[in-house]
Amino acid sequence: MSKLIYYIGLDDTDHIEMGCTTIQINNFLNFIKKNLVIKVKELRLVRLWPFASRRTRGNAALSSIIVISKSDNELFLKLSKEWFNDLLFEVSQHPSADISASPALIISQSRLPVDIYYDTVTGHVDIDKRIKEIVKFDCTIFSSDDKFGLIGASAAIAWTPNDSSTWELISWRDDSMIGKPRILDVSKINNLDSIHPNTFMNRDPTKNKGLIAPRTPCPVLYGIRGNSPIDVEKAHIWLQSDLKYEQCIDFKIFRTNQLSDDHVTPSWGTVTCKPTTVQGAHSFISVYSEKKNLTLVAFQEGGPVNALLRHLMPGDIVCWTGLCSPIDNSIHLEKLLLSDSIPRISHRPICCSKSMKSTGNNHILKCIKCGKKSNKYWISKKSIIFDFKNIDGWTEPSPSNRRHLSMPLDFEIPILDNLIS
Image (cartoon, rainbow, N blue to C red; front, top):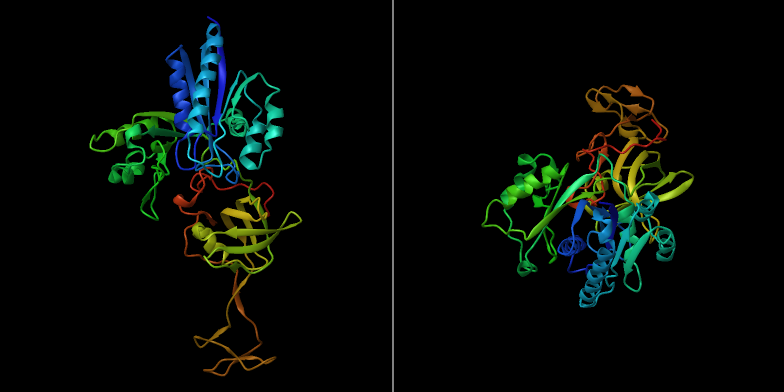
């Protein structure tokens, strides 16, 4: 029997305070399965540019690769349209918001170019330009009138995973529980890393704070991230084993681009001024990099990144990863390294266990104990020992203050091909 492979993309279905596109793609596939036989080869969750103006909470688009019988193609497209029209009605009932949902569903018989993904994860995408790109391909498109969801839906199809891709199991709540506090076993969440070591980002040890459960009234009960589908499913079964805690209504496992650093490119430059700290402890510094003057920003929430930036001096060479703000073109730092420091003045020469003292302007140094004299100079040191956490000198925020896309330093240190060693 002849088969068809379809690449499905879905985005922009949720409200800032409710809903989730993860459950909508699950609803779509369940609706199709009730009416015809399909094979779901893979589900994907693709995080996009964190500064996107229309983003909701996690700014993720969803995709799925499915296989159907060629003879079912007409019915499949008919059912897809029916489901999408129901989705449009559901979205029309959302409370008013500054940015309304703009759903889009793309059904493509071919992968879209990976450049579509990279354009969407690294910067702003113009909707008219994106439409011109995707209509060149053999796609069936369903969308709201303004079509903004096509940006994320196309990017989700275009993303090409690799061997280092991570996985996330997402579980959903019963409708009767949405809006109520999540009832989870905190002790098990705290022990996820040790009992299931191939899962990660389960909690922030610096704040004793769990990271798997959302803090909004959305349908998601929790999400468990890990190295493989088997790892996250085992952890999920373990969490759900005690029936006195909240049970999920359904779950699915997604391959993701989380922790990939796909949104940033490592860079380096020379510090040109002393740091400035403003109210709220956000800190700024200027650097010269690739014939341009740039402003690096470390927010208070950046913790060690902020602390390191405030120690920098003109002449220091630094490396970083971060995002260029569309508002003022400053670089919002995600990781920071002091690659090469200028000497820091430490003290005057020592004599008789005491620092020698200056006898005045343009005069010599003198030991206040034995009277020994010396030309005037300072003792300096090149390296600085910082009292905050770092990995090979690189600093990053605590887990709860990192972006979904940001790769932890204990996974991999940023690599700069053109870095001065």
